[in-house]
Image (tube, rainbow, N blue to C red):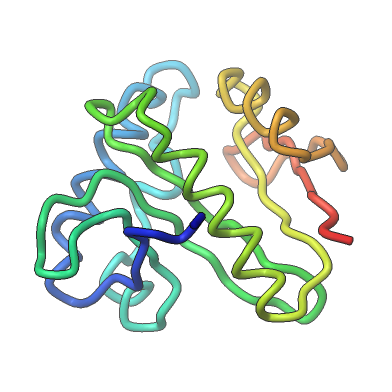
Length: 153
């Protein structure tokens, strides 16, 4: 099952959410020249709003990955996905992306949208393998972003 071991984050997870996000995005700071937006997010507010889902044990075990998602009128927005570097290659990212699709379908939303920094070329190889297509490239403030969507029809 795609969502096995994936649960809504709770307040006690906020330090782990921050730690995993920081570890996942820190390597990009030098490359893109700015701190990636997910590192500056208000993790406590996102958790409180029910936007954060983690791969981890229900009793506060280690968090190895997470997604931050938000239901919009016509799509599910995947704001952030982060996998701890120690968990790379273990299927955590795949499970999280499958969870996002399942969640969007459960909410009756026809597509998932996300963006990634244009200099995070690793992501640009990953997302198309999971059915995402490039919609546009746009500069948003200091961020040069490639926008993707995945239709779930």
